[in-house]
Image (cartoon, rainbow, N blue to C red; front, side, top):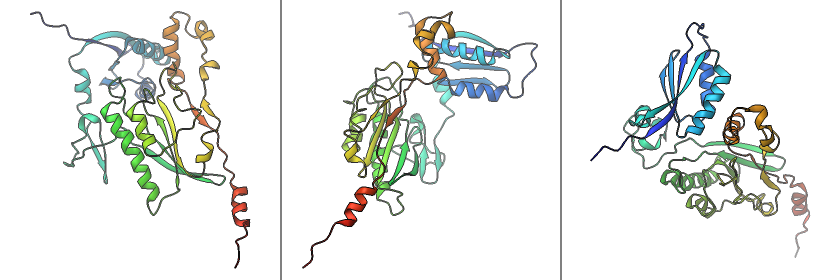
Length: 310
């Protein structure tokens, strides 16, 4: 039986142009550009050669255009196809779990191995961030979290665990003695494929509410998935969530519009232009919710109630 051919992956080879003076800040500028391109893996030697690996040719081609425009004076950018050869595993092999105090931050492939032998049944692929705020009478915390993507399907096991654990942790935090507020807002890119996903339902099962006007709203640039969410466990505003003004902001209606295709990318297709413009802005749309935060009248009404005597 003939061997099945290995899968080829799209990649970019970046090489310093011969005869061009080496810019001492090139590595830093390249790192900034790469960070905005969503590159799954990078290998190479600083100042000489880099190879960027991608999961789709369209993404690779759009990245080549961005890199050429930004750093073409110093770098030759070439598209290549790379035999599978388990490159992702090899590149990621050196990325292991890290322990900070009692918290383990680990990539999913190294969840159970800490640098000091610490065992854990679960760790977030990306660390949640939590901060306290006050707006008018409304005192609240915001937790931003980017759930693990994993496989391109609903309810990746790691993604589901992250959803289940983050809401539980926030509820526990609200009950702690040094809690900032009894109102919690959870938001971010949750990689929700549908509001029927267990990943989504895990949030609502813990009594977090999604404002009615954005529940199920598509938030990615091509508007076919409700990836991003904003959820409230906030008694001070919960009565507003059913009627609150809310939505996404479709910035491609205002900048990098379809009508501008030939201005920005005259030598490419509309589909490639639409991919390219996400590197200029984002492949997700901002979510917004408008809430009243002046509770002064309600406070005064409670204080002015005359208690019965006798």
